[in-house]
Image 1 (spheres, helix red, strand yellow):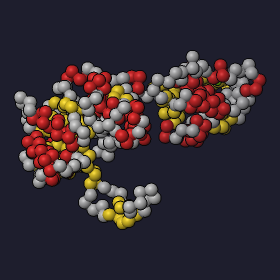
Image 2 (cartoon, rainbow, N blue to C red; image 1 turned 120 degrees about the horizontal axis):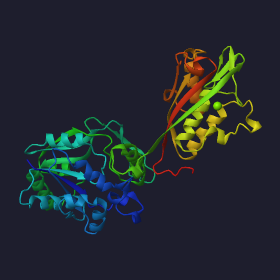
Image 3 (tube, protein in one colour; image 1 turned 45 degrees about the vertical axis):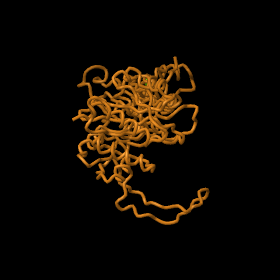
Image 4 (cartoon, protein in one colour; image 1 turned 30 degrees about the vertical axis):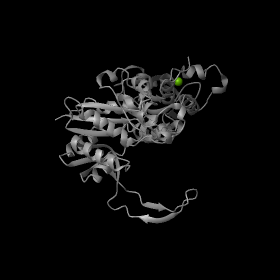
Amino acid sequence: MITTALIVAAGRGQRMGDTDAGPKQYRTLCDRAVLAHTVSKFQRLPHITDIQVVIHADDSELYREALGDTANDLPPPVTGGATRQASVMAGLTAIAARASPPDRVLIHDAARPFVTAEEIEAVVNAISPGVGAISAIEVVDTLKRAGPDKTEPTILETVSRAGLWRALTPQGFQLDDILSAHRRAARSGQSFTDDASIAEYAGLRVRLVAGDPANTKLTVARDMDEARIRQSANMTTSATPQAWPDVRTGTGFDVHRFAEGDAVWLCGVSVPHSKRLDGHSDADVGLHALTDAILGAIGDGDIGQHFPPSDPQWKGARSDQFLIDAARRVRALGGVISNVDVTLLCEAPKIGPHREAMRVEIGRIIDVDVARVGVKATTTERLGFTGREEGIAAMASATVILPPATSLPR
Ligand code: MG
C-alpha cells in the first residue's frame, strides 16, 4: 500500500502581512523554513511512503533553499495553480501519473508545521475505499454570527456549536476517490476551501479524526511569533544547536567559621544557635554559595568580585542583596532561573525545622517559585571542620535558561 503525503505550499500567504518577507511557508521558524519543519513531520513515518510538495511557479529557488539536502530525497516539486484547489488538483494529477501511483494520499497544508505523528497515523488508518478522513477539532467555544456591518460587527445570532468541528489537515483519501472528486469539482467551476468539502460534494463519506490542538495553521503575523516561541521550546530534539534555548548550570561553595553568638543566618533565615557565623557580611553561607552558583551559570565572576570584602559598605550587610544582584544579572541577559539547589553541611543547628522557611525565602529573593528551590542538609559524620563544629559549609547549584545564542559577559 503506497501512501503519499501531498504538501501544498503554493500559497502566497497574503494574510501574514509583510509581503517583502516572502510566503510564510518559506519564512524561518528558528533553525529552518516552515516548509522544512512540515516536511520533516512526514519523514520516517511507517505509514507514509513518500512526500510530494506542490509549489508556486515562482518559488523553485525558495523551495531548494528551504529544503536543502532534503530536496534530493523528494520527487521534484509539482507546480500549483492559481488557487489552493487548483494546486491540490495539480498535485493529485501528478502523483496519479507516476509509474506506480499511490493508493492513498494525505493532503496537508505547508503552513501547519506542528502536525503530529499521531494525527498522521490516525488519519491514514481511518481511510478506506469511498471513505476519507480528516484531522479535526470539536468546537468548544460558543459561536456567534455577526451582522453585515464589518467595521463595527455586532452579534446577529448565536450559532449552536453542537456537532461542529474545525477542519484541519492532513485530510486523507484513496487517491482515485479524491482525484475524481476534484475533477468533478473543477468541471462544476465551484470553489472549495478544503479537500473534505470536495469529497462531500462528490458524495464521499469523510471521517472526523480528533486532531491535535497544537496543529495550528500559521496565518497572521502573530501566529509566526507564537510558532517561534513554541518551536524554540521544542528544540531539544532538533538538529541545530544555535537555536536551542541555552541551558546552563553553575555551582557554588562557601565556608564560614563559628564565633560567639546566639543565631546563624542560613539561606535568608535566622536560626537560633549557640554560636553565630563569622564574616564580613551576615555570613549567610547558604546564600553566598547560591549567589556564586548563579553567577557561575552565566560566567559572570563571583560574589567576591562584585562585592569585595575589603569594601566597608558590605560590612554586616544582609546577604540577600548579593543574591538579588545575581538574579538581576540573569534577567538582564533575558534569562530565567529554572531551579536552584543548596546543600548545607553541618552537625548543628538542625536544618529540617527551617527548611521550608529557607526555600520560601530563597524563592522570594530570586523571584522563583518555591517548587524550583531545593534546600538540603547533611552532616559530615563528625569528620573534618564541619564535623568538629568549627564552621558550616554550603554547596549550591543553579540552572539558568538563556535565549538562544546569548552573548555572555566576558
Ligand atoms: Mg561567604
